[in-house]
Image (tube, rainbow, N blue to C red; front, top):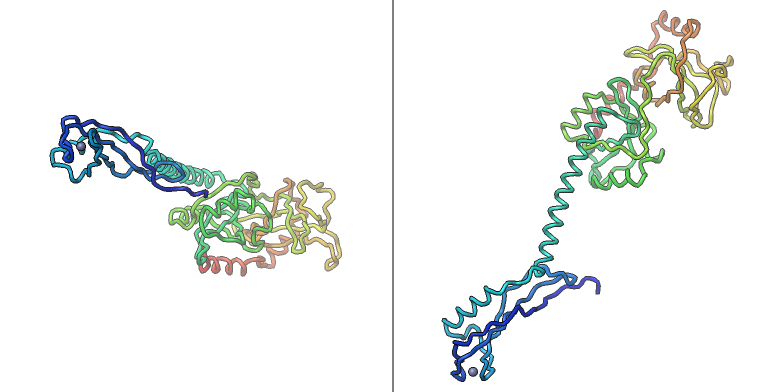
Length: 345
Ligand SMILES: [Zn+2]
């Protein structure tokens, strides 16, 4: 049997009581043998039980009940019992248990301290793929993971994972086992924008528990800049190149080239980028698309390289200004922020 436990008895020693009289044969000379039992688990003594004394006459060998001895003799036995100490190993289980408790408490405190130190550092110097652990109102599974896609100035772009967890350690395990590194771990469409101040509030209120840096963090993309070329993912899973023409507090005006890529391009030769001419054909570009800043941000553009914006490229933008055009994503953005207020976060 694997789980072995029980009681063991050890003789601690004997004490001669030569000047004590045997109640049975009236000769002088008794001897007490002092024993003690301990409870063991897996043969490790956990705690000792009270000591017992076996008293016998050295002459007639009559065993004498400790309780039946005259007061004077009983006091002597009691004193002898006290004088013999149980060996330290009787307590080894207690010591091991206590040490374990101390070490695990210290380690727990250390981990918690380390977590909060890391969280502060990771919020100050965010990296792409940092994982934000939020407490959500999901019955029984309150721990949700969001990954940081990007930061734009004071705004953080967080993408929701599609699993939530029973415990914080389950959530941490998903990170350490690499589950959260899989692209299909996240809801493509569930991307939220938080300001640094909002994140700070959530941390203070306990909605944001901790930030964990996975083993494969990526430096954040450079801040969005006019003239930047970005790869963006199309709905059908292919990739296109967008150029940021005009960027202000509200809007991101871009153009999208007709060139398509099966995997996300990380380098591109600007000379090969074409708008195409036939609108409506399968691959064509669009010279000017007015987006809200946030909806461009949410499309998760990956910076490729910096170029210049030519005067000619701004024709569409100037037309739009003249016509007092609207921005794509304006309605959606309202929806998102409403949904956010009602939603789990
Ligand atoms: Zn005797």
